[in-house]
Image (cartoon, rainbow, N blue to C red; front, side, top):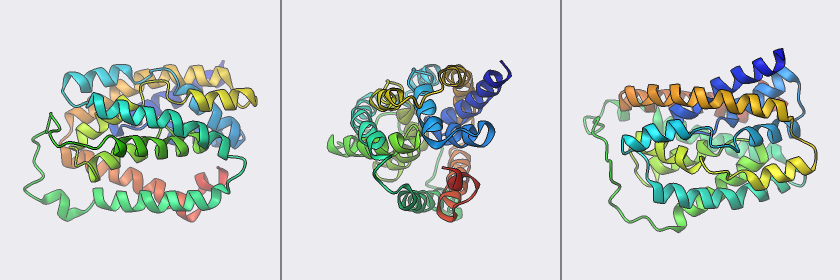
Length: 263
């Protein structure tokens, strides 16, 4: 019972991160399960994917949608790509050396984080609080589809939702406003895109079901809180907080810190 309560708290924390940054929450769930419950990597990854399978961010998505900060078309394309990629990522865990991939992934996060926390970028007058509600430029469907596949592969390998890739891509490549990017990323992660990966892990017995359920319930509550925080903050603060968050994760992946060593 106590372990389930702890798992619920983990879910709440992951949900807050999901609502604030448009991520699935797995980047919080996986290392926490390993550190607190000493779960092997495969069990932590499978349990995280299972917890993220249900539409745990639906209430947060509703808030972003009502604020006109969710591009449904882009979200759907990314979700389709995620569904494809997560299967291959789950299958690749046993054949690809994850150490090198973690370093490459960490370098990617480092680059993105430095873009977000650039002091000059934060004080530019052009960085206003005006939100572009309708994304007017024509976006080739292949772009969000491919980023979905890439994010899905990482999701299947590390049990993350994929938002760590999706949100920066929407902001830096497609020039989405930060709040639009976060809302659209959450929308892409809303559908059961991790199902192929969950099936692979379930068939191998790598899911702790009671933890997954408790975490999923916690994410529902946490995501609402995170969404409210993001919608109430100024854009520059959202970018700064997200940049610092990515920087910490990047450094841990690159140098093999307490999290990277365990996973």
